[in-house]
Amino acid sequence: MDLKTILIHNNVVTSQQYEEALGTANQLHSDIMDIIISKGYISEDTLGEIIGKTMGVPYINLTKKEINPDILKILPKDVSIEKKVIPFEKTPYSLKIGMVNPTDLRAIEFVKKGTGYNVEIYYITEKQFRDLLKRYTTGIREEFQTIIEKHVNESKQAIGNGKGDDNIGLPIIKMVDLILENAITEEASDIHMESLEYESIIRYRVDGVLHDVVTIPKDVYIPVIARIKILANLKIDEHRLPQDGRFKININDQQISFRVSIIPTFYGEKIVMRLLEDSARKFNLSDLGLSERDLETVSYNIKRPNGMILVTGPTGSGKSTTLYTILSILNTPEVNINTVEDPIEYSMPRVNQMQVNPPIGLTFASGLRAFLRQDPNIIMVGEIRDSETADIAVNAAMTGHLVLSTLHTNDSAGAIPRLIDMHIEPFLIASTLNIVVAQRLVRKLCTSCKKPLSLDNDSKKTLVELFKNEIQMGSKNVIKIIDENEFFQPVGCPQCNNGYKGRIGIYEVLEVTPKVKELITGKANAGEIMEEAIKNGLTLMKEDGLRKAKLGITSIEEVLRVTKE
Image (cartoon, rainbow, N blue to C red):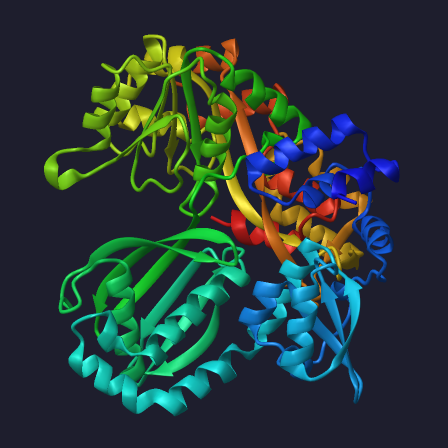
């Protein structure tokens, strides 16, 4: 019995709901069960019980169960990934395993022969399997140490040859593979590899925060750098100049692109690798965390045929994700979309994407100017950095194009004086700017371990002081939210990183209403514009974060961390 039949037979979904969920899953390159659960048709555990019963095996939720690392080691991680099997408990004669597909008789027989145990089979969901793979990462230090101790001499010889992939040595290739695979499993956004005086350190950025993973000897780090240079098609013998490259690998049925940046430092070369999915993820705007009011404002303005939409915030605040989400909504056969980016982070079908190349004269401004001769409907400029780009973008918005771009400002109203600093006339800004979305990313509290937090009177007073600017600017809900005293705090468990798992945006959406247009034309300052926007319903970014803290999505500390100036 296939999944569709199981779900319809048990009245989980209708045939139409299943087909809609399947279409969404195909668009997002996601598992259909994840979509069905996210739409609220059924809980994960109830769905697991139904499928397990149909397959004739018991269902178990292993994400809530402690698993001895020694039991995990019974099956190597690569075998676990290939067969989608997790060992979780054993007796002297049998091994309990969770399987995504309990009907895979070849996998069962493989585990029996490979381990020497009889097996007891349980059904686990695909999502739980992905989460459980993270349990293997706790042994990365031991795995690294084994490679280093066993093969350090071979590694030294390999770097001495240093002319190609064959000379790097299998231990180093395995070590680099382990670094990359572990980063994907931990859902890292970046890998940092840094050379210190006597050793080298590898760090991952997970949910916006860097943490140490492992240290390795300097004489092993050197061939690791050489291996990465080979993957990224860079010069192995260049150690004095910065280098940039890119490569793709397939891991765990995912195609991941790694953008590589190498710079020379005092103690050796430093590498930063950004992990990018090979194709853009297709979000709904609501998935980004926009409030109901902000969602309506953004949805209305992106459907306008012309004008300018700006997204502001520091590096790493999710601006690109917001722009790509808007593009994925606008990307229909009826429109011509062109982008000029630095770099192209995701490839999008039916979108004409151009990579800037300043050494040959291909800048944001020249690329944007060329696009205007390509009959575009929608243009995305990766960033407005200078007066020339700003001038062309504004003129494109005036002549019937919808222009999307980013600026580095702290809040939404700050985009207007920033454009004026680039010598754009206020009346042109007023006539072309539709909305400005300012944003930050906050870590989400782990739903498995977060716990309620009650503030005493002193803590409330401190919190009011920390939100003083928002209160003085006319934010209506800050005091009310603090007085309601409904917050949560991180704890920490095997399913998360110190009490947090994943990230979500906090936003400030400034709509350029007729009154705001008047203020811009009259050369009002950012504070005056913000006051008018608040009267018209704008929610300040810190207030949006406080609201999400009240809902248990994030913590107060996290909101204050990302919004501090």
